[in-house]
Length: 255
Image (tube, rainbow, N blue to C red; front, side, top):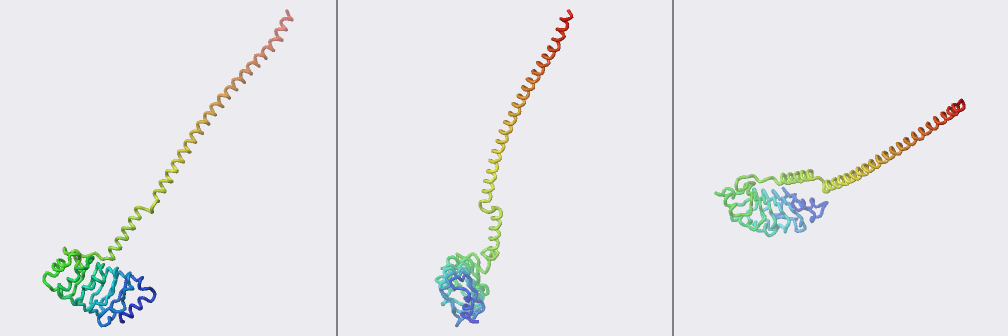
C-alpha cells in the first residue's frame, strides 16, 4: 500500500490535528520521499516510517511536538540536518539499517539539543574504529547509543518506565488515601470527643443532682419518721395517762 493511501485510511475517523501517534511501517513511499504527511499533524508525538524505502527527509513537514521518530530499514544516507529544523524537540531517533557511513553525516544531529537516544545499528558507520567513543564525543547531548550508554548500561524500555511510574503513583495514592479523608475523620473524631465530653459532664451533673436530691429526700423521710415516732410516743403517753386516770379515780373512791 502507498504511504498516502495509508495515511488516508488512518484519518478515516479522526482529524489530523488530533493524531498523536502515526505508524506507516511497510508502506511504499513516492520516489523515496514522504507523501501525504503535512503540517496539519501538529499534535504528533510519535511517528514510525520503518521499511518504506525512504531515501530523503526533504519533504518531512514541521512537527514541533514530535518526540520519537522511527526511520529504521530505509535507504537514508544523509540530509539529517532537516531534522533539527523540522523536529527540534526529538528525544529518540532510530536510523538503524540505513546507509549512513561516516561521522560527518551524524554531525548534522548536533543541533538536536533534546536528543537522548540514537540508534545506528546495522549502519556501515558502526564498522568504524572507536565508533561508539567517536559518536559520544561528537554528540554530547545523547545518553544512549544503540541502546546502551557509555558504561554499557542498557537503556530502560519506555513502556516499562511508564508502567513503573503508574504503579508508583497508584502506591502513593493508596498510602496517602483520598485527599481530605483523614482530615474529615479527624474532624469527626474531634466532634465525637467533644460530644462525648459534653455528655459525660451532663451525666456527672445529673448524677450529682440526683444523689443530692436522694440525700435530701432521705433526710426529709428521716424527719418525717422521727416526727411520726414522736407523735406515736405522745399518743402512747396520753393513752397511759387516760388509763391511769380512771384507776386513780377508783383508788380515791375507795378511800
